Length: 140
Image (cartoon, rainbow, N blue to C red):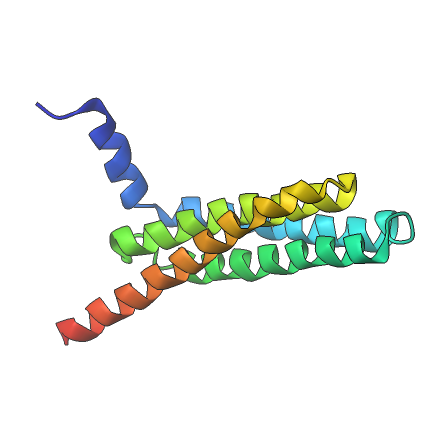
């Protein structure tokens, strides 16, 4: 008998392109909104170093939204490693960029201790891409 969570794990591992496109769109849209917010609302209202921290969050969010978009067309064919990369990048965006946004807006510098977790998730996603490439190369 199959464990009830097995079906969910299989669905996550075999991501649909539509899910990846929606994630890319959501993260791309919110990066643009956050960048606009930084430029037109909070600039001049928070310390310069906090604004720079906020902008780092925007930049990394957009980089990884574009990476998800690039992989979205191959999501169904990229298998578990491609899906893992997309989920790592998605979680990385939420944790890395989210903690930087909150740190910037609240001044709660302890949130900087959470940010590296998101960075590790970003790196993990890229490692998944490298492993996927190595595996594809070995199939030739």
